[in-house]
Length: 251
Ligand code: PEP
Figure 1 (cartoon, rainbow, N blue to C red):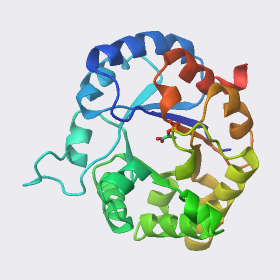
Figure 2: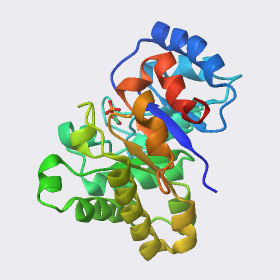
Figure 3: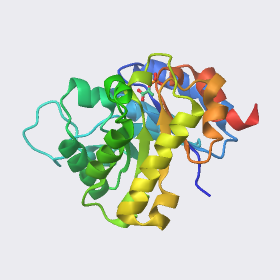
Figure 4: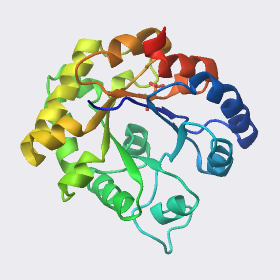
């Protein structure tokens, strides 16, 4: 039985004082959850988030990292740096990074490998855009992205990778994939993992859905056979709303 994982992606939102307030409000609301709860916060909030979640069941992640360990990469943050302050998770290859910052499948793969080298747990994002969906090639796109992201990882590393299926047309748009469509896309990703790394690995790998998840659709999405939880953007910025998503099974 795979554990449910519910991760918030704050993107470029929330100041340190807002982070502290959020955690004060949010932590008591989710203290009884059995899900793995992760907040992926901006770099400047990491310290405050780590400090304030110490006595809680909330884990902290970053939203990106560089694949090199150190060196002349002005403005970048390495996996080693994240690990050194106690970060546990890192989002890799979010569609906004692919779209606005030129991250290719090759870069995503390098970052994934670097995350494991530094003992971080990666949440790697894949997803088709609207044009690809309309052309009927969504499944090819997401299974290929998955294959390229995971290339060269060991079976154990693949097992420890969280994959987030995030159709780009559903991110921040209010449009959610139907639970059936999202579940089918995730099944296709799981089948690809089975083909490349074996059935046992595929049965264990956690695959999330992301794209306009909110408290009103979380239960339906997360109760399907293959969706193991969510990567949540906008709705993770409000403690009460995000807590309702985390507690989707207790409504
Ligand atoms: C995301 O950016 O990972 C995301 C899913 O955003 P939203 O929930 O706002 O669509």
